[in-house]
Length: 411
Image (tube, rainbow, N blue to C red; front, side, top):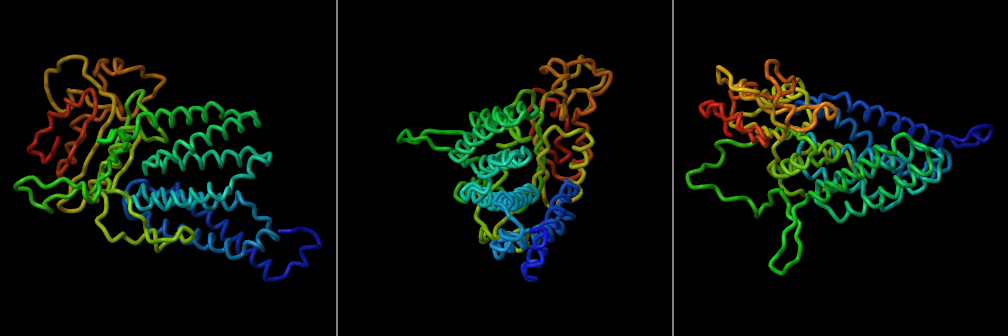
């Protein structure tokens, strides 16, 4: 707000407008930062907090639209600040997708991120001598790229990568920063990701088609003879990734990326307008069957993995299946053991240190002591009390054959 004697000339109504905006802005930041403290596991205890956060951002977004002129004149509202609000709303929708697995919210995140780009909200950031603002812009690009990858919008991804590359070059040229290597690594990772995915096939007329791993309404496979609908339903999934030297971007390996899409239906737009995010659009269930709930765990420690497993097991509905997808480096025993139990064949390593590990050979060391973060087949026995489906994509997947089929485990 303007300072000095001129402040006395500001009408009371306009002063209240600025005060209300500052309150909503501070409240929105407080709630948004509080999202980090919410437990990542469990499906219900976080919903009310997300609802309050969406509600405040809804009010803030509408408020700045309705009082833009006053905020421009009296508060000095800048376009990058509007862009930051829109970016936070996009992040809210993206994180709501991660917690619900409903792909409709990806479309909502895409809408807000697209609006930032189309309306050039961050265009003036580079003219200010504030590197932290440029970093906000770079992070926005990285988040936008992730959403576009998940929606298979590869043309947009390539345009965004080119723009991000130019922004990084300008950023590192203008400021003597220590994070130049980190941002260049981001570019390398996304370039490798684009090269690895999506799968492209040729049509009969030799045109290239990008195939989707998601299930479409017309692409659902027919039931095999004798199968009955409704006996068991996939309700929860843990997707775990820790392979050495695998293509990844933003804590999503290429294997995790493909698997999470295989467990989703094609996105459908929500009936919400782009300038009206909030409780109503974000918490009402779409009028269609939901996707299985998923946890994406990149290099989890053993304790983290067991915590998420226990939460999924506890909340698994009746007549439902828990799926575990393991894409990880194998851990092998050094020799034949006197016994052949579920802890004698090794397993997969869910968390590793790149500086220590150099290839699979190091994992074939003496098993007189156990790898702290190795998930052995025996570690999964407690969870076979409910229907469990395991997919092991590893050089030591054979270790999991020791689990008996009589324990309702499908391998």
